[in-house]
Length: 333
Image (cartoon, rainbow, N blue to C red; front, side, top):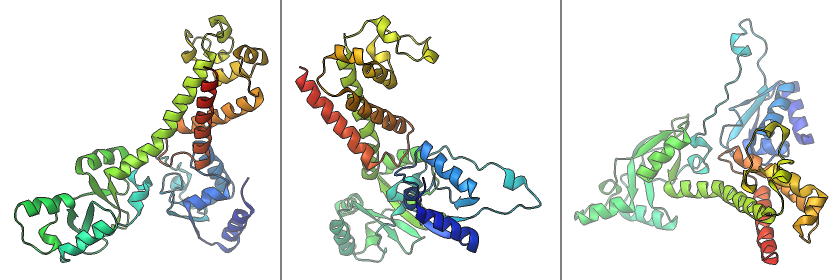
């Protein structure tokens, strides 16, 4: 259900033909959503379509903290070809989704003194600074590495231009994320140029490491949780009993081990009261199953990979569940 404040915004757009600018994150908030999951995107897009509102750029593929414009959808034209065409869904994750690609970097002029560059790098704990004349013109990059290389060659220059490298990689805002990662690993640092031809951000190997740590943590925790569940079920049921809980649509699926089951099938086995008694676990079955269903929902979101990651609440749920299973495994030893 949409928040009342958003209904007022829609009313203003329709009655006053206004164009309203929101943060993408703010748009999600109006729909009680924390992330752009496939399900959340469908809900929002259906609502906007129903009210004949278009969002530019597409909120589903733009930067989470970037602006989007909400306005009335175009009226019917003589030539309906363009209007009737389906909006292309972009299946590619692009570098513009990264926070660091949307944070204009601190830069320095080529004619600044080297001491200024060193001071800025130390103050901000940076390994590099782009050397720029303005927001669009990049002259090069100065790093601890380029400074060191020049000093070993007995450079006596006083200015940034004497220590910078002109070998700097600049990627377009729409560059595919995974192609960009290869270049970031190779170059260690790349600059990002937005659709206004301005340098919108700087992305380093550290940024990529942090991003993928954020994205991989849920996968690792989910694997731990599933391993704990398998351990609980291990040796408690016959193969014939287990097969009773496999979906009818999956009747041709070969089941030989507990690990051949899906997460949903684990739940179906354990939510049965008789099966639960055989597990001999002195915890509340209904509460336990409710949490597993919550984990299953999160698992489905995680498997639909998106650079936004999952919500903080969902991360907390996974971490709490993992800790719960660790405590439970100690008790069951």
